[in-house]
Amino acid sequence: MKWFRNNSLSIVFFLFFLLSIVGQSITGLKEYNNEMKEEGGQEVSMRQYFSSGHFIEATFENWESEFLQMALYVVLTMFLFQKGSSESKDPDKKEEEVDREPDPKKKHSPWPVKKGGLILTLYKHSLSIALFLLFFVSFFAHLYGSLKDYNHHQLLKGLPTETASEFIGDSKFWFESFQN
Picture 1 (cartoon, rainbow, N blue to C red):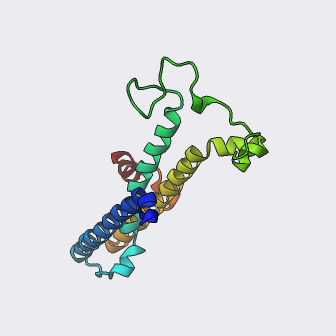
Picture 2 (picture 1 turned 135 degrees about the horizontal axis):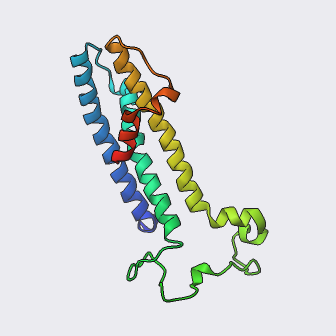
Picture 3 (picture 1 turned 135 degrees about the vertical axis):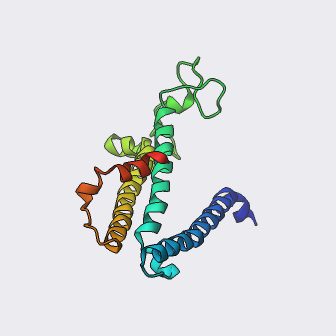
């Protein structure tokens, strides 16, 4: 029970994630199969749907915006203030504890602090680096899924497909990115 209490926030958010992805999968499959019927394509199973451009595009389009927002929030709260916010530094203080350089001589200092140099710099910025990397992975997965879905629909209509370099300049892709 102590393990659950100590990890309850992560567990609850993971359950919300599962509920959300299951809901998206069920409703997305139904929507996709309706589109396929209308366009003369074949309905797919849930397993096939998971590898469809429709599912990949919808999933990563959402994640793309979330990771960008989180990354920007982390970076911008280092420099910008919001008086009264518990997530913001106090604009009236010159230096806060979070701004102090970590002491490598302390017994329980993390190993990157003891190592110093580039390792410490990466460690100090690891959250923003991780969030921006997740954003870029989501961006390119969104591009891949959207292109795959677009080309699938083009083939069903007997129209020419596009390459990634053509599609990245298309307003459809950027509309999907900016609407989130």
